[in-house]
Length: 361
Image 1: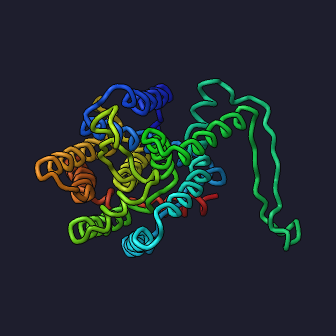
Image 2: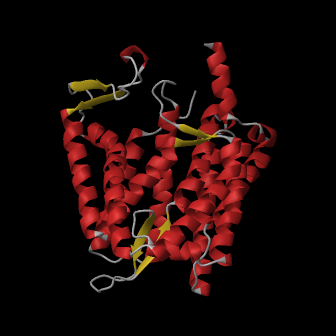
Image 3: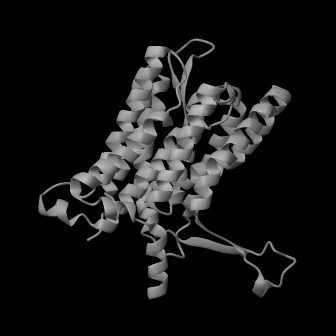
């Protein structure tokens, strides 16, 4: 028996997300409470979608797996990109930079938002059986048709309408840069990131989080680069939380998407670990059958709450991964020790599972 995603719970979470994206435009929610609701909600939705994606047939899933080499290189590559952005912000005229960023995220945002909302909207309208139009585009014109890898597009009439709506929203963001449109696109990127990125094994997950733990500390406490990029780059790479309404300029607090996606892919891996274990012990004792996932969600919320508390006390930007990484890794290890499954957890590898499946086939 595998762990199943509750369709009703997932649809309810989408509804709550819509509420959290719309209500704060009219009714001020304390920015700390706003943050503590939005970030865990995005992680929860992303994890559920990641589990659904992992249960698809191998040829249908579009998940990208992080290798050990990727995990070790990520902090270095991330540092190079971050410092590069810092130099660009300092040297390039802000007006030209804003135009370039607007064009880029208008295109990216339309596809990201469509990928996030297409499934829920199709399900809400019960449009799964609508006629679909399919077309292969052979873009590799320099190759023979039989040797080329075409881009396959399959869509229904509803998909076209939804995409045009998403494109309109992305264009509206590029023109107006409204904070709530930023949050809409940022939420889509966060959910897609958690859904489409998979850690190859528990050890790889720990390596990635540990590397980014030191990365975040250095670039926030050691330099002003991280804060300067976050404030200077007007793009949906963060979630914004207004501290007041009806005033200009609008005072905003922020949380980078990395503080949602990076812990989120680790929490999603714990949900898939629960699914693999099938949690027979929990079912026999009448408990929830996703103990690692729930422990990590609690750890993530507590780590986020500690980040907010320290930020409030010292009135200074904090590297959220300083608190989130120990919370996520620690909660998984404590759960494994209490259940007598530490060795099983440390040996957990999704890559090995895929290899075995392929050999069996």
